[in-house]
Image 1 (cartoon, helix red, strand yellow):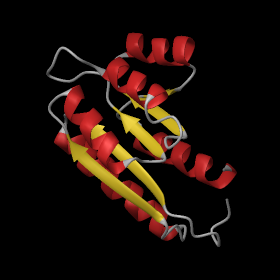
Image 2 (cartoon, one colour):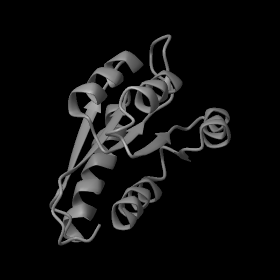
Image 3 (spheres, helix red, strand yellow):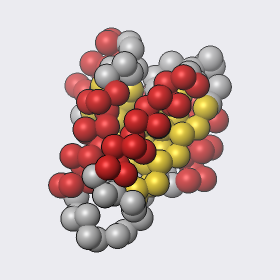
Length: 136
């Protein structure tokens, strides 16, 4: 997809750490703006549980979903992934697990074939979204 094609692209970032979503969201919006991507809408949602994240995912119906693994609940990122792959697979085209937990990250990559990026690697997270948009 080129920058001149103006199809709206929704990006949803869900995490239980408000500083993470605020920081990544702010940098992401700035980088998209600098690159001329005014058709990318970034939603940042502070979620206390994986079920909250799933509700936001179902309401917003993003094309790109960035999600944490650990929440303060029994459910986790694997539950989010199951809903994304089964119930919203027509809408969600790119899944990125963002977590500081390398064991979970390895499972996302090896068993589910999706990107895992360390939560602290803001630039890599944003570059992965931009690469997807530019190669779509």
